Image (cartoon, rainbow, N blue to C red; front, top):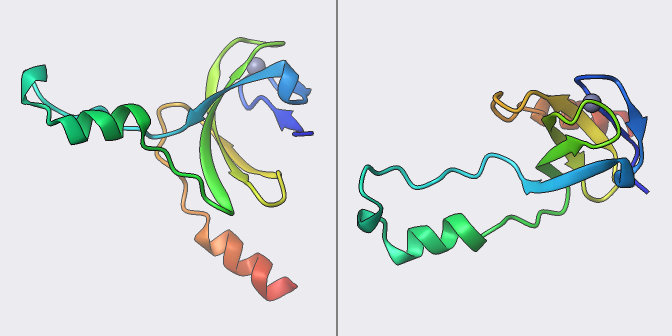
Length: 105
Ligand SMILES: [Zn+2]
C-alpha cells in the first residue's frame, strides 16, 4: 500500500484516495505543424515510458481532497514517496539525498 500526502491540501491516504497519472515530465514533440513529427517521435511521446528500479517521477491527482494534480518522486523499491512538488516544477535533483542515505547505511 502506498501512503500519499497531497502537497496542496494536506490530505493523507492510500493509493485509492489518489489517481496516478503515470510518468511525469513527458514532453510533447515541439512543432507548429503536426505533420512534421516523425513516427518514432510520436510513438515515443505516446508509449515509451521509463520503468526504473529506484527513483521514479510521477503525476498524481488528489481525489479525496482538493482534486489538484501534483508531482511526486517515489522510490519503486521501497514504495516511499521521497518528495512532492508542484505540477509546473521541474524534477528535483535528489542525488544528494540518495548519497546521504547510502552513506548512512
Ligand atoms: Zn489535495
